[in-house]
Each structure stands twice: as C-alpha cells, then as structure tokens.
Figure 1 (cartoon, chains in turn blue, red):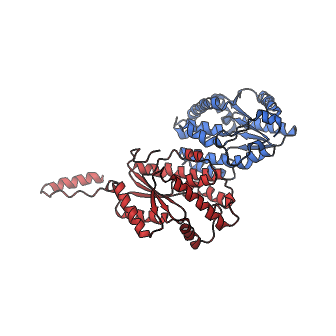
Figure 2: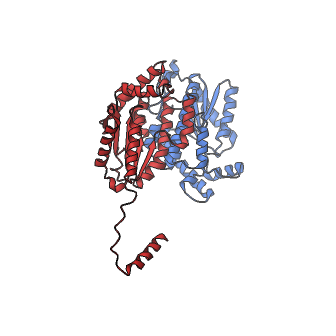
Length: 236
Length: 251
C-alpha cells in the first residue's frame, strides 16, 4: 500500500464484509452509476468506458442480474411473477454477492476500474419502497465494498416515461412497480412508483452520500460532468 | 425473537435439527405419520427444497461456484420462498408445520464457513422461532458412521471441502461436522432446543417426541374437521327441515 492510499485509507466494507478479504489489496477503483431505466445510465457508462480505455485504464463492467450463479433463474422467476418480497430481495442479493466476489473484488485487486451499472442502492431503494426493514437491508448489504464514487442520475418521472416509451413503446412491469398495486393503469403506476423510488434514493443519499447528477440535461454535458468528477477520483 | 405461539398464529411449527446421519429426518417422518393418522392438519417442509431456487443451488454446487457468502444467501433465498409462500399461509390457517431443518442450520453451517454470526442471524430475522425445536444430538462418531457406511461418496459442499480443511473428503467431513456440532451445542440453551439423545433406538426416541408434542401442543385444536356433531334426536316433522338445511349447505 502506498502512502497516498494510506492517507485516503477509505477502502472499507459497509458492514461485516466478505470473510477473508484483504481490503488493502483492492487497489483499483469502483465507480457506480445509479438511476432508473431511461435515466441515461447505460449511455453514460458506455461513454465512460470508451474514455477510460482510450486513456489507458483497464475497465470491467458489472450490473444487476448478470451473475453466473442466479441471473437465469432470477429472470425466470420474475417472469412468472411469483416471488414474495423477501425472496426477491435475497435472490438479488445472491446475484450481487456472486458478482462482488467473482468479478468486482478480483478486478479491484488487479487494479482495474470497475464500472457498476447500478449497485446496492437500487436494490435497497426498491425494497424500501416495498416496505422492507431498513436495518435488515443494511445488514444484508453490509457485504458490499464502499465505492470510490457513486453517481445518481436523477431524471423527472415524466421525462422517464417519455424516454422509456420512445425506446420500447411499452413500460416494464417491475420498473412500473406493478407488483405494488399502486394503480391498475400502468402509466399512472410508473409515475407513482418512480416518484417513490426517487424519494427512497433521497433518503438513502443521506446515509450513503452519493453524488446526485441532474440527468435531465443533454448527454454530452452529463458526460463532461462525470469525467470531471472521475478525474478527481483517479487522482486520489 | 418470538415463536409462532407468541405471535398468536393459529398454527404451530415444529423443527428438527442435527447433523447429517443424526436420524432427525426419520423422526420427523414418523411424527408426520402419527399426526396425519390423528387427523391433524399437517404440512412438511424440507431445507433447500424450493422449486424456484433449486436449479441455481444445484448448479452452484455442481460447478463449485459457491462461496460462503453466496452459499448462505442462496439458502436464505430458498428459505424465504418457502417461508413466505408456504409456511406463513399454512400457519395462518392453523396447520402444524414440520420443518426438517430451520434457521439454526444456517446459523451453524454458515458460521462454520466463516460468515459473521450477526450477519447470518440478521438475514433470517424475518422468521419467527419454532414452537418446538428438537435437536437430535449424536456422538460425532455415530452420525459419521451412519453417513459413511451408507453412502461412501461425499459431495463437495456436504463434506465442507470448500473450507480446505483437508484434501481427504472423509477427513474434511469429520472436521466440518465436528464444528457444526459445536455450533448446535452452543445454541441449545439460547433457543431452548429439546435435546434428544439420538444414540438410542428409533422407537424410543419417537415415543419421547410424540409425548412431548402432545404435551406442548393442544393437538385437538389442529384437527382437519372437528368431530362431527351427534345427529339431533329425530323428531317427526323435522326431517324435511333438515333436508332443506342440507340443500342450502350444498348450494
């Protein structure tokens, strides 16, 4: 460990962490981009990867429901729509843990920049909206390593609905929170659910202190903003 | 943590815990047969049996993809699915639910694998405690012999091979089971386990189990149908009214 890192010394787990992991070996950087579907998350991550790799930085990408272990089963179970809330929550946590241990931690150890297309905050926000106990979630996700930066792309629900419909001509069942029975009308449910999600994110922001980025702006100016902030992270 | 009785559930939950080869599955099976014969509403649920999660778990085990953390979480997912979709509704409906292994299996195993005890317990804290937990306590050698005699090929995770305790699966299994036994013993008082001497013969143990269950749970309350009421003394003229009532009931 060099002096610089020691001074910043902020590599830590949120809670109990993963057994037998040596935090001081995790030399890479973990950068998280959070936001709803249609917030421009994927676009921004693709641009950041281009920029970082062109600049000579090795990168790795992770995201929700991408684990070798359970992604397929999770997808199936969600289609069948038969999951109760703790089950869904734990299934996602398993998916997250699998990627954490098999991709994120080894990549950080190898000095890579890990770009996470969403992280524990989306998972927690979804559960908070569904009335799950926050203390329970905090303990569960105490396995997560604290990122070097978290950016939340905040976009008005009215704008999200337009972007999602422009892209897919339909709204996703889960992103509309249809399981919550907020409204039988999918359009209304989407707006209500996304508003509740934003409130949950604001609440989590107080605990986890991520950077809120105004995602209502043009793509280029958001990228510029992100680059500036990431440059500072890389300089640490 | 509270039991289902403490929480005023109409149903009751009985769990059995113990090492592989402790005879707990035989005991709970015999208990189930008896309760069924008594006309009790009974449901049996086994650890790691949710259809939903099974394919992921078996893939993880076969391909040795699981770490202590994911091993713990995937079993918690399995438990949550059974708990929320089966156990809770049945307990609300006044069933006697029998569980072959409950949260204590995770408390023991995951901790032996190196997960922090508070983390594991925190994850399962949505589950209420059983109304009776039988811990079938055998001498380590007895349960080892029962397993090793009958089924010589040990599976990777079953033998705790992921812990790298020994390159020899049998030696690894011994050490692993020994550590789990220590965890069970350490939890016995805290969770008020009914500790059974599982070295004695099966029939004798079953007698004790049945006696204890009938003492602790007022079984007549859990019958599928309350005994049919005696027919009213037949008086002429009432037959027609009775038939009419039956028709109404049938409708």
